[in-house]
Image (cartoon, rainbow, N blue to C red; front, side):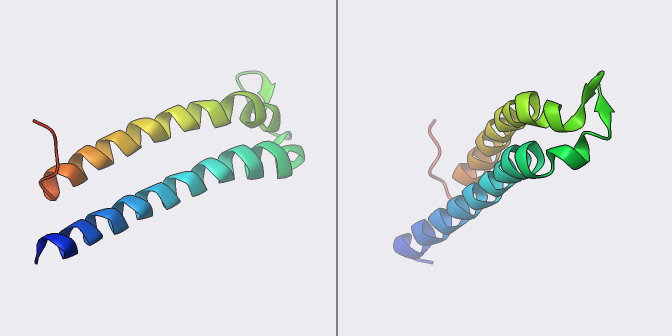
Length: 86
């Protein structure tokens, strides 16, 4: 595999990670927090209605967790394609 093919594969994988993680964030913040809030309000989490929780806390917590996951995935990908910083 030449250098261009290697970097193309690296960026394809990077964009795939971004697409999946942003899709998860969209689902949590928009779908669960806005569109499905009334349905989720039938359940409670920590004394609060679940739809309210997703709209106010869930999307922020998930966003921070997705950042941690992205950093771990990218560190692994950087090592695999030997583009990591020493």
